[in-house]
Image 1 (cartoon, rainbow, N blue to C red):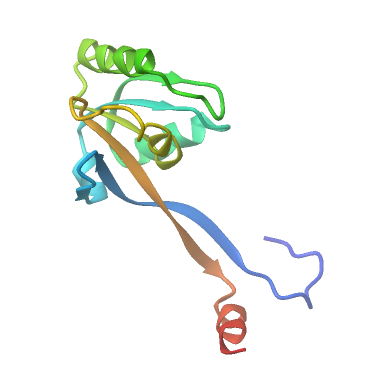
Image 2: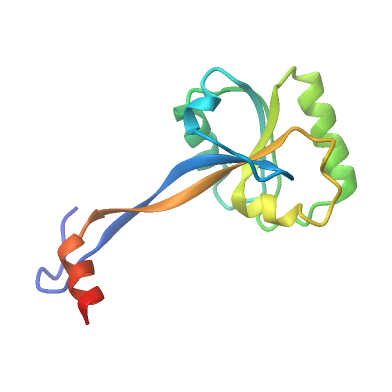
Length: 136
């Protein structure tokens, strides 16, 4: 990446998948658990294509998808529709983003095979700057 002001400390990060979390049990699964699993994905985020690419990169088989508008307010009808779509597409699980999973906590979801993808922030460049800031 070309830097405009080379004397200003620069820290480069990226968002990367960390693991999967099942709801409502909060049991963790490693990313490789998704390999060759059939998943029905859904999200209500600004860039659903990025979520789809991430899931594809994890070698999951996407059997279907619903894209809601950003900051979608989920309803019980949405959950019924999602579970029906999962079943009709022969998907093993419903998979969503962490942001969307937090919006579903108010609903009874015990009957759904629902998981979300946990994301972490990875430091790519700038470790010396971070270390210097942490010493202050």
